[in-house]
Image (cartoon, rainbow, N blue to C red; front, side):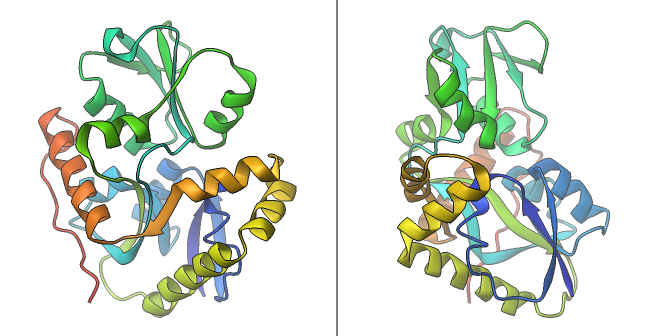
Length: 248
């Protein structure tokens, strides 16, 4: 049985909507799953795209699957009372290395400090970012939207990866995950209702949120990911741009 690392956020609902695979699900936040994958505690996991690049010498990527957006994503928000280009300090979450790196790419002049330290803005991801939209009247800046405005490309936040070598059944698992996404897309209202019952957000809100997420790793996503890696290198967040798996 494959030990499959599942991101704990609601953005995974379409991927697991009707997953037909013999797996043991292990749930955690993105950076935790990356650590577990590298430690051999899970066999396959959705991990921050920047963590794949940092460990590409020991990891392989599933070539057809990712978590991305082509514009606003809702679940990666910079909460700030002043314009982002004027920021000097941002508190960042330890849960997603990709979002932290993206903030560095988009706002290179702003110092990043741990949560709890004084700063002019805070970076929120996942369910915390979604909740903040309801609870905090402070202006929110969507990093997916800003990335699209600056590059014209999708932003790939996470990829599915496994340690180099053979994981029996890996191709079948990838197809099962993609099949679940297709099923979710064919029943958007039912997906939103089931996710609402599990995660507690209004079904209408989730329906709009799921429309913004992309899970297929196609040519434009590949281009966007490579551009992200290049810019991450330019701000010192990555040593080199790795080669990416291609869909045969």
